[in-house]
Image (cartoon, rainbow, N blue to C red):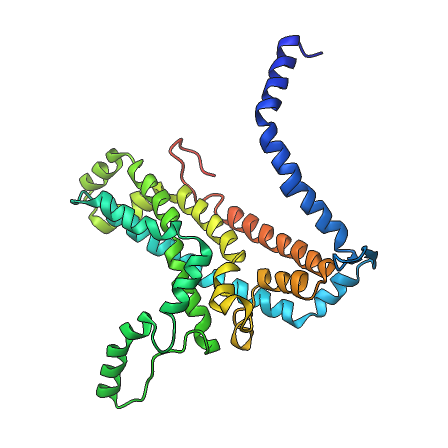
Length: 314
């Protein structure tokens, strides 16, 4: 059945209204993705025309120990930082959900650090994690001294940026500053939970922990899933903070013993240090598939575990 003139006008008006987004998607998302796919089959240094080499980049990638090291570091960082950030964000949202004096001030204080640009955040934590004059070690020093006195040990404060054992824990601590958005989303979910559910739980004899486990957490499960997926994607994209922690690449930008070599860092090294853009594109595409696979896996696992107010599960 042919569309009426009114439907055609509505379609034309709709396309006109979304045209800025469509143009941005085509120019900054679809075109780079297609270009990366095509360049991944070439030897391309940006300074010269690409030369088709077939699947050589992908064969090299399979045997590349640095890529697997970067992927291991990235997955390890995500596995530790994402759950920690979710737990702390949910805990802060729970505290801010109580009716206490000045809670709007506390909400602002907890949220403000997430507005700090990543480069500034890296500069701040480079000073905070300094092994000699950093505030983190100055805070830990009394506890280390007390432990040495009681146990007769010879513990010292960590060298966060020089010791490969502590570089990732230091980065995970720095990532906690970015949980403001997740906290606000959790808080919105808690405030939308019907009070009738809490009243019914109280009638059944549920205490604080009972209401938390059987009312609050199920009610905010969609928000939990959203924050989990966004946190997972964001942690896999980490680049700016470790880059700045290593003094903007003046020091080895992958950290001591390559402990801060992440996939995004490795893509940057190949594309803009080694000028091997074809290989960088191949890494990028494989990385997209890894992130997409993990995201779809999380959504599949949570398919029947997310409660929506409408009464249907995800």
